[in-house]
Amino acid sequence: MTHPMQSFEEMTFQEFVLVIKIHYKQIEENTNIYLYLESSISEEDRKKTAMLLDSFLRLLARTHIEDLQDDYRNFLNTWLQSQLSVIDIKSFNLFQLIFEKSLITCMIQQKHHRMNAALMYVLSIFTYLVQLYDDRIVHPTSDNHSTNQQLSHLQLLDKLDKLLIYSSGYNDLAYILKKCEEYFNYKRCVFYAYVPWSNQFYGVIGAELPKVQSMKGQITELNTVFSSKKPIYLKNPKNYVKEEHIQLFNLSSVIFIPIIQQDQLFGWLTFDQLGEEFDCTKDELALLEEVGKRLGLFLSRKGERIEQAPELHLTERESMILGLLAEGYDNKKIAGLLFLSEHTVRDYISSLMTKLKAKNRTQVVASAFRLGLLS
Image (cartoon, rainbow, N blue to C red; front, side):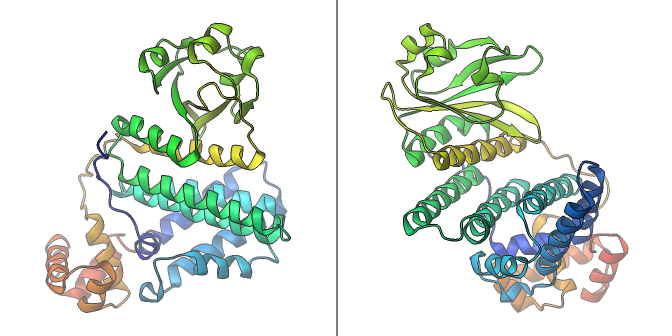
């Protein structure tokens, strides 16, 4: 099988921070909307979450791009350390949820051409933040074996993130599932799609494809493995899966992982060892749940057509250069930060001057502020 088409560039931390800088005002407005829209959040949790969001966004927006390294770990470590007196489990979870929703909404509003790369990068960042938070707050005395296992899980998710970024769409899903088998040490991974209008499931992709595609059925309350929105590990599936299906796939132990993004259910992944019984720890099940979340994000974005707005439109590279111009960087520094030649940077600036009807760099920035392209 050939490698998927590489249709998305990998995003660096510098580029991610630049996206935040360019769209800071819109993201901040979105966080306030989502934070105060949910009436079930207590006032105390709202205040704590608002403090976390504000400090995180301000730190990203005020950091000089040239001071950043591509490895975000030290940066996030320092930020989390500064928030230890404020943070707790509930406010941390709310902080993650609202930041992700706010960024997604902003990127849809801006018709961002690198939406996938940025959103996958956010998943990587929060995977690491969750790990840091767990090590420092939830399990501060965890032993070395546990820590090493958690770091291994983090590295596996990073590999999956990169695979999804470089994948070209739904047609690469078979390749992605084969890589999931390899990454997470399972002999079989199958995708079952959900049909919302008929409340049914059907087999789509997996080894022994004719058998997989013969699988279909109605979802009922009795069918708990397909009606649950949480991962399920079945040491023995006998009481949960039809005997004919157990025989068809030679099933012994099996794991069901729902693929959900923003309350939209796309389907389920199953992992098993081709008839061999196996155990699954709580940490391993949590790892596979993260796999499901990433695939949910992947399926929600892939294939989505982004229509050009009739008003002035800048390419993503032009937006990045505009943001750096607004911060006062010269051509040489911009070229170094974005790994471009100075000649290419000059061409981009000339394009900006044409689009914004500006005579020089200063007028480019002034026009961009006036038109709302910069916050």
